[in-house]
Every structure is written in C-alpha cells, then in structure tokens.
Amino acid sequence: MSGPVDPRDQFDPGPVAAGGGDWWRTDDDERGVDERGVDAFEGAFTDGFDDVSVDGSDGFGRPGASAEPDPVDGFDAPDPAFDDPGDGDPADDGSTGGDPGDPGDGPGAGRVPPPGAGRAARIVTVAVLAALLAGAVVLDRRSPTADPARVTTPGLAGPEVPGDDAVSVAWYCPAGTAVAGGATEETVYIANLSPGTITADVTVDAASTESTTERVEVGAYGRRAVRVATVARVGAPGVVVEVVGGAAVVEHEIRGADDLAMSPCARTASRRWYFAAGGTARGAAQVLELFNPFGDDAIVDVGFVTDSGVQEPQALQGIVVGRRAKVVVPVTDVVPRQERVATVVRARTGRIVAEQVRSFAGADGVNGLTLSLGTPTPRREWILPLPVAATGVVGAVAIANFGLVPATAEVSVLLSGGGSLAPETVDVPTRSVVRFDPSARIPVGTTAAVVVRVPDGARVVAEAVVTSGGGAATDGGAAVAARRWALAGAPTGAFSAVVAVNPGPGPVTVEVLAYRAGDPVGPRSAPAQVVPPGRVARFDLAEWGIAPGQVLVVSADGPIVVGRDTYLGAVSLATAVPFRD
Image (cartoon, rainbow, N blue to C red; front, side, top):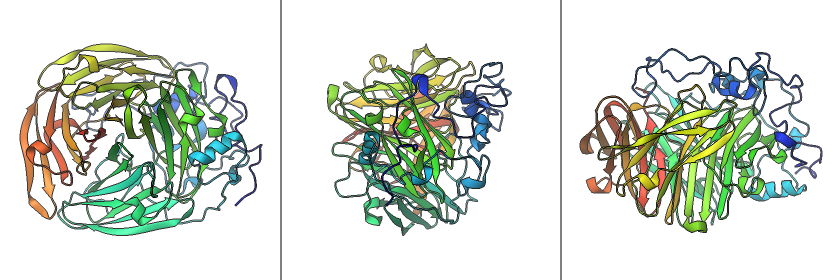
C-alpha cells in the first residue's frame, strides 16, 4: 500500500473551477486550441463520421445520401470542452480503433499524465471515493506488467454478433458485484449460436486479487449461466468472456433485493462513453462502473450535463483505472440532487468499458434497479423499444446533447396494432439533457417504440427510461437496423417479450426462433408476423411456450430493430445484438 494521498495529485478534490474548469486538458495541452480550428468537443465525434452505411443506406433500410458537411465547420472560436481532438486519439475519427491491449504506444502516446498519476488507486469503490472527496484515503499501488493484448472488434454502435470467421471473441461485462450480500449480484449468460460446442473462458479481474478464470463448454444452441461469485468472490469484479469455436452472444444480469436487469455485454472498449439517462434526486442512486480489461493503466475524465449545467468535479479528473481493474464512481455523492444527469467519460490514455447502474428506493412510488451500457458515439438517429403500456408505468426517453451545436429532434412514437402518435419537435439546447414522455398518450396494452431523428447535423445520445412501482429499466436502443438479431434468452423468474420495430418504408415479415440445446435442426418458432412500415410487433415468449433459457434469434426479410422487455416479476429492457449480415 502507498502512503496517504499527496494533496497536490489529481485525486485532490479541490475547488471546481467556475464555468466548468479544464478537466479535458493534460499537461501538454497548453495551446488550448486544436490546430484544425474546429470546436474541440464537437470534433471528438463528428470529424470523418456520418450515418451512411457501407451499402449506401442510412442504417435503417432507407436510401442514404453522401456524407453531410461537418456541422462544426465555420466555428471560429474553438472551445476545447470535454475533449481535445488534436491529441491523436483513434476515436477522433469516430472509431475505437488501435491496439487496446497496448494503449501506451498507439496514437496519442507520450502524453504526460497529470501529477500524481502513479500514486492513483487501481480501484475506487463507493466508500473509497467518498473518502477521496473528504481528502484523506490510502490507495493501493501496483505496477503494470506486459501481457498479451485482448482483442476487440469495432461495432456498429454497440455489441454485434461476430462473423463466422471469428476465431476468438472477447465480451466485456463491467457492472455487478460478486460477494455474499452484494447489492447487484452478477450472473453471466453465454448463448451458443452455432451447431457445435464452444468453449468460453470467464475471467474475473479485480484490483484486490489476481485474475481468476473458469473455462466452461456450451453445447450447440445452448445457454450457460455462470454466477460470477463462483469464479471469484470480489466486491468490484470486471468480467471478460472469451469465446472460442463458434458464434455466441454474451449477456449479464444483475439482481438486487426487488428487481433485476439483464442486457448484452460490450464487444468493444473505447476512449469515450456517453449516457443520456441519469438522475440523483431523492430516493435515486447512480453509480458509474469503469472497467479496464487490458494490460496497461487508463487515465480518464468524467463530466456531467445536469439541470444546473455542465459539472466537472475535480475528484473525477485524471482517474487512473488500473490494468485489469474496475473503478466504481458514486455519481449520487458527486453530483447530488439533480433530476437529470447525462454522463460523458473520456480516456486520456488507454481504453475502457463503461456501464451505469441506477437504483430506486421507493421515492415517488418508484422502485427497482437499472443497467445500461454506454454508447461510444452520439448519433443522428436512435430507435428505442418501450415495454407494453400499463397503468402506473412511465416510459420516457432522455435525449442528451453534449455538443456546442443546438439540436432539433424529430420524435415519433410507433405503436403495435396499427397507428402512431403525431410526431413532435423537441429542442435540445447545447450541453443539455431533456426528457420526452409520451406514456400518457400510449393506449394501455399497446407496445411502442420511440424514434429520435436529428436532421440538422447535430448528434445526440438517447436512452429509454421506464419506471413503475414494481421496477425500473433503462436501455440505449439501437442506431442501426439489421435483418437478424440475437438474445441470450431472457431473465429467469419473470415474464418477457420480444419487440420488433420496422422503421423502414415497406412491410417486413418477422419470425422469432427459439433454439433448444443440442437440437439445431428444429428451433421452435412463434408464428411469423407481417409488420407494416412504421409499426411495432410483440411476441410474448410464455404465450408461445418459449422458456427463458432458450437462445433466441429474431429474423426478418428487411431491416428491423429488436428489443426485449421483462414486464412481470421484474422490469428490464434490452436491445438485442445484431448480426452483421
């Protein structure tokens, strides 16, 4: 263990600078202005990026257009808030490329870390960060050692099913606990999408101990559940699942006292992560879980867009996320009493995976637990499936604009059973987060999906938020459509449904295939449904005799977006994992 924290190092809370401070800066950023003369934050995710897919469509089955002009062109007064796009980040061009296993010698290498970085903690738990904010804590210190890189594959806007030619694929699952009585006990689900047996190495990384690995086999089209605590009992685990031998999808589930949340793990690590949905008002707790699965330390900055404006707590600038370790940031303690909190995480060096967990303790009749994976890039379009409308259930969407260009969003609500709500225009000012709540206008018993589209060149992050007396859920939706989607079944002990959204201009036929382990010949299928353009279809799994443990593949003859909602016994939302066909 190291000695007491040097009050001059990057973890000293100190005063927060008026107007936001310089949390995006490092010691060699004295120029303050990026050489290209564009706004630095906007450039972080707009340079060289557009939403036109490789086949010329816009990702949702509609004809595309040529790349739009960069919305930050013409900005004469760069504002380097949140990022410095001239630092050589691979993510400056909208990608997460580079060698994540060796971030020290990729683009942007040689940056001088902030003073005291070598003394920083490998892990910051809720209690430790609280002590940090109080100004006195003893931190663990370990030196990184070289080891083989774990390989990631760039995704579309989130995880995707690996191709048939993938030899070994890693999935990263940051959130959860693995000790007796943990607040969010974690279970990993490995779903085999191939006709042969696959092997999966489930590795639990933690700062407090050496990594521990358990190897499991999963039979053809089967699902294997692994409680993380059976691999290693640690308070703040980061989990890596490395699959060999065939295509698979990996999800993880966290369970609290009264609710659960289940969603796919990440396929990529990134230099940036964004979250639109958050809040720290009375009765709500929010934590951010940052996992570094690689062999070198990462240094990250965390900022927030809130009701009160941009907040950049000094204690969250220059956080060292140690190699193969996880940092847990108690957002509630750092940014208290805010109705709306959108979060951005930016790594100065290295790459991480970020998830957010929220819990509700009965205030205003809301209970439950939510889990959401961040998105590495704001986009112009999002599709967010919502659960079936019911009395006392509020299904809303948080829309966050982290940039300096105001956004005007066209928001449509698509319904099952025909019809849709009249589109609305929602203004999202610069560096703000707004809430769109259509729940009072959705008929009870109807399943809906919200489409957020920003045609003016700005980019936003959108996230679905569902609250009720019986549970809560958040989900980031999809930024692309695909013909096939996969899910590792559904949560046990609850009732779930699959939702298919047709955002395209023509009808599509949708089929849900439910595989039984070891029986690749005849998957059970719910009756196919023809989904008209701009409509939503719902497949209740229990109604068609589909068990939670069956691996699901949703197939269509045109691009769709697929989600899963759990609506009885718990409340949970998740977007399925697309195939890149």
